[in-house]
Length: 540
Image (cartoon, rainbow, N blue to C red; front, side):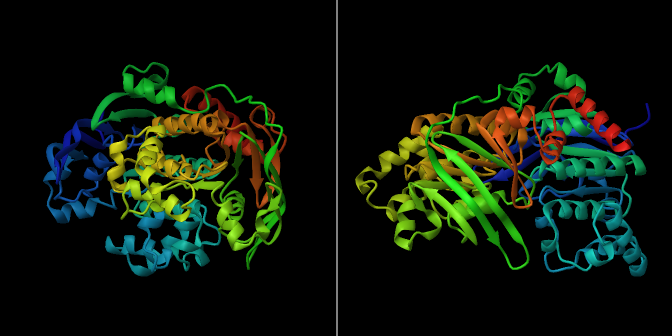
């Protein structure tokens, strides 16, 4: 066999912290050949992104330190190169796209200039770079590329921003493209488009593609080989089909076992009484109509999922329900009252009954407050719920109910993992003893095993506290496992609704069928059949 294009050998990375050294990567070895797609699969903290950052020279040293190993690109060790030689390779020969493009695109510069600058830094004339930028924007599917080049990052959707990052990474036609969780927060249809674009560009250019992910569906869709990492070490590797069909390591088996969409579909009978009813709800902004006559019913003890692409109106519906924004029309009937017409005093009381768990607990939990302060704040706002003398015991009980311990109440949010922070957010929502909890993409950014744990927790708490959920999500396998009924939204309207079994096994509308077809299955064989069917349909 020919020499690998990129070859990582016995790489170890240690971070020096106030509590002592943390070995993030331990003697990791993997390689990738020209034209190959390699996936590094693992949960947060497994070391997959750290090893990729070492390839790109993006580890801050200190506190990080590469303690052993070699990284060979075309037979030359990147770790022993001088800074100038390494700079000529980074971006030009090995490029990277990141999970959150909005954090890596400069908000004060037009996107066209940012892509141009990538080429200018490596010696391309400005006029030539400008022409190439327009061509790149067109190639990655940005509408009206010449006009788009004059816009700023915030003027694009999430999927379009990811396409901009891909255009920037491909500007110098690299040999290796590293994609770090490139589709994690994207809708299923946009995710499918981004993966199809990466595959197509890879075939055109012959570059090697390294995908870092925690999503087994992404591995099944795009990867030739997969490396499984856990706690900084490689525990298993092989072809995607081999690893899925015959996993050898216990960790890999747990990952595959936690993949959503494989369990029994919920067939829970609906409660006889509606707890909430939306009637002809609309929302108008200056430029467009976000909601157009939405009607839905939430029953007692039910999990109602709302699915759809970004811009479909599902999160707007949640914001109107919680009165975070004012509706333009319609009614929201709760306990015989229209929530949209309540006085401030009445609304204050109602907020106890309807709580929300947001997508990103890092943003929704105040970093300056301890867990005790975050949870007990609800009782400061509503002092009639619980005497102050009982606060500490109730916080301890709530933490235990969400799978944490009483000693966690003295810590701050940054001292927890993403899954633990989401558990804290759920405990805070439960503090007011609500009847309804709105979960807005509450598990979309979590690793598959943590996601399964949080879903199991929500299901248990529903029975324990008699809760009803509105579960907003773009991850259809999770919805299949968790929801009793599903509402499908598109462009501000409900296009279809029914039981979970009806929606997943016999969808009526073409839009719903398209959403389900774009959803990824963790089984490479099933995903291959779906891909063949999709290509055959496109050919017709």
